[in-house]
Length: 549
Image 1 (cartoon, rainbow, N blue to C red):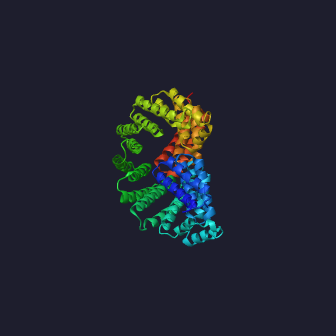
Image 2: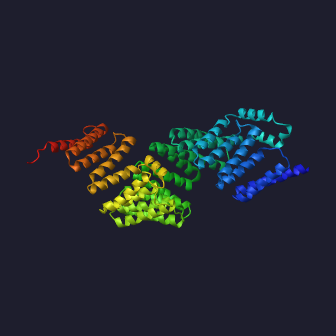
Image 3: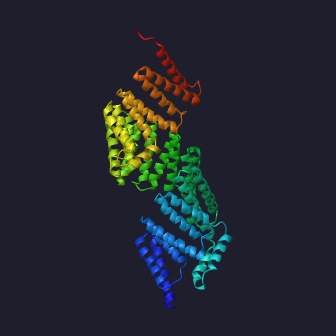
């Protein structure tokens, strides 16, 4: 054996040790051996081969695991560049995998533009059939020098014809289509996301039918269920709850068939509960959540956050069913689980806020305020400021409790602070603007402000905030919507309360808008439409009534 052969062997051994340590999760030692392998190969002037590309891919994965995004991208790009030099791009599976790896790092950085660019590149070079792959590889290698055509590279070419090739191709194709679906989902393009996910599902179903080992079978069925969940989530975002439920049930059946009761099965049950909850089918939601909780308690560690999440969801269902005391018990149990697991995050704040809401419904305002204040403090600690749009919801809840107690001036302090934040006057102007444009928080806030000002007799300010609320509703919901109609009615009542002839005219105009909206929605003989008509008739009677002398 020549010294060069010895060096080749030493490099391969170092790479093999690196791979063993990598799969054991010992990333630091794996990195050392991978870099040693590359150093030996370069010192020996060994021609680049697919082994170098694989080492760069593993190094990139380690950097990605450690959160070192740019280093991960650099190494994935080195791997891709080598694959391109050795085998070309079109039809090379590992080049497709490298594009996916680079796109995934950008995706996790929320750089969706670059993520999409790399995922589409992966899709573009994805092989369509075996002949195109062989032609691409052979044509690329024909341009290489004799010394570059090592035995290792010949083995790489032959691997395209091996028994495992079709399975590997299916695995990478599923990943590629799923990645494109995920970035479209994040971009809000749900129809496109569903289209990509369905391609992935079709390929995965075909691969699942192939004769394979038990381990591979479980991995395939797990992927199949995950894709079904992705399609379900996209349908849910579109508001197509029946389709979402159909795919979540499909995922559940797949998981139960292969795994029985495990964490993934429990996740499917929880997702089914979410769909029923959104559809306001609370009894079915409760049944699914209780099954999920039972499974999670059996298969997860005692203080796992998923147990707390399902317990909290059960509390939410019970609140909607009017079982506030039982709801509080589930929220408190969820908090106990969360805190025992030393997880202090926004979900913990939400649980305290949920307790506050349940207690507010029972009239226990002091206890409600106490829990809302705890929720506020947790969020404040997490955000590092008390001047952030994410805090507005809790502050509005605190203000609403003060309203219930008749302390309207105290309530106004909280509502006014929220208004300042949402209108961008402070530390988080850009976040505030984004929140005000993309959520229902301003609508709720303006409603709170209008009601509170109306309660203290400041009808002018009340009308101002009702009008701001109406402006958003007419844009987002349109004029023919019951929520918009209610706001027309409330503005009418506010102007009527002011009492002047001019205000009576304004009130009448808004009552007419309410009547027109409901007539177009429900028809002339619907109770809501007739109520709106009665308001108009009453105004005419009041205006025609002679004044006393």
